[in-house]
Length: 318
Image (cartoon, rainbow, N blue to C red):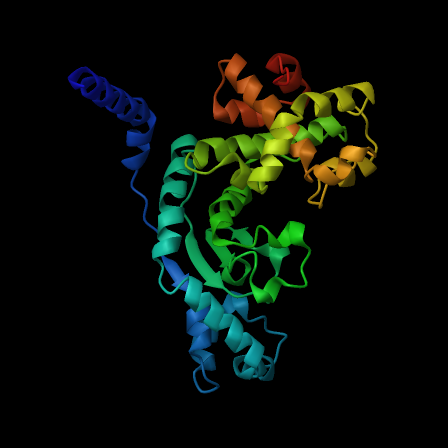
């Protein structure tokens, strides 16, 4: 029993030490940022105080809109319900700080030129296509798109979209927004170039979100993630046998890359498959490339897709 306890202690110490080299350095990176709760301030605004909040947040009040538009919004019962639901999930800034502080530290470690932004939270009439917006030194978060996948506000939204309208996706969504600032859009129109673009994005999430599950990084549920992993060999065989990799057929994006309820192989397995399966494959190719080559993250971002593929020595897990 004493031997077992000693062995367990050694293993725990080793686990802590194996984390420490990189993670302790990251934890020491100083990161300071403000979180400005525009959503809260607008909720407390009255027609009499409207001028004050417009002066503080001019970017949210386009000049072409008359004050009557904002007064109507202040008095709108649906907007008031939206504000109440956001306050229930995000009553303080603590949850946001818990997600963003370590994320910003990780981005800064791997991308030293990263400038920590000012964070502004708002409501967006559940604009799930613009949950996170990066603009210069601002990071804008639409908190009404993180109320929980089963929230009544999302009942009319397709389930493959609504499943990611939850607070657990906030970190992955912010990471995606910053990754796309760093990764150049592929010049080539090939399917391979497109999936490796998303593979780079997902690999950055590996580095920036070490505590997140693979499912959360790509926006799958656990069952969808398991299906992708279990069928990786068959997916790859389908791509190769149908000569998809170097095809420039624009329909391939909708079939295998864009968010969708399922991927479209035009086979019986379609209804079992998750959407975006091309992104999953691109991710595995980039992971293999980084495992088999001595290269930096910044070099990865500059490396063309065909070079990554050829030097990745990618082979699906069997």
